[in-house]
Length: 263
Image (cartoon, rainbow, N blue to C red; front, top):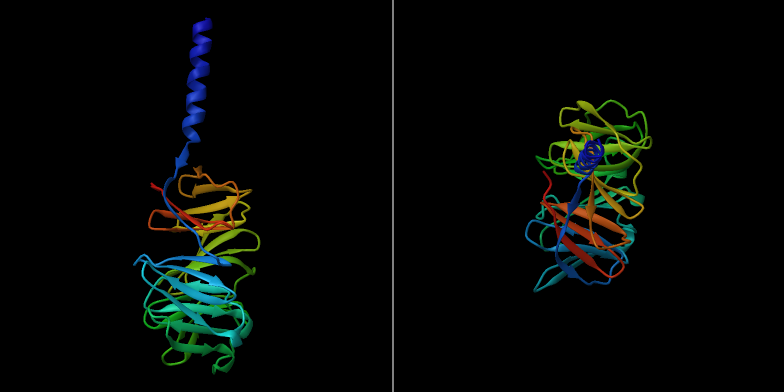
């Protein structure tokens, strides 16, 4: 009888443990730098930072800089296309597009557009277009930055945007009630579920995201309804970024890169 009880206890413990495994992150390297914000990496291995509103592209052999003091604070950087880097200056309702040498190729002041736009979220899309959330009508649209044309594609959002990300085909956001949505290029909106409380979040795809809470990193799989803690050595950090199985942790000391395998 005692053996049976012990066996049942061990079996139950094993089941609980297997349901809550930890994802081990393997440290690759660390980089020290003096900056206010770490923006992320591009596909060519350059990393990007902001200090005193100066945007920097840093590589092994060179560092490039872009600054536009007249536009104030950089509020968003889109690195999806390293040949067309998008900087958003929300306070001045302006977007700047840079080439890979950080030369300014386009400057878009939405206040000067034919259609009235007050942008509060932007991201690069395909066919010379930008995703733009217009707070005047609470709708998402596309701005053609070559022809200076804007068209609305979505119905009005019910709640304000708390966090957002985008790629060429999908714009995803979390509203102030932690509801997660995705909108495609045709304006079709899909509800993805409710996000746990977070301090910082990175949406990986339409079913997975990584979020931090109280300096703990959690991988959440919406389809499996599964949370997995990611083990890192840092006890505190400012921000993290995830791209192509590389998890970058930004602290006051610099950046630490980890390799993680997300199933």
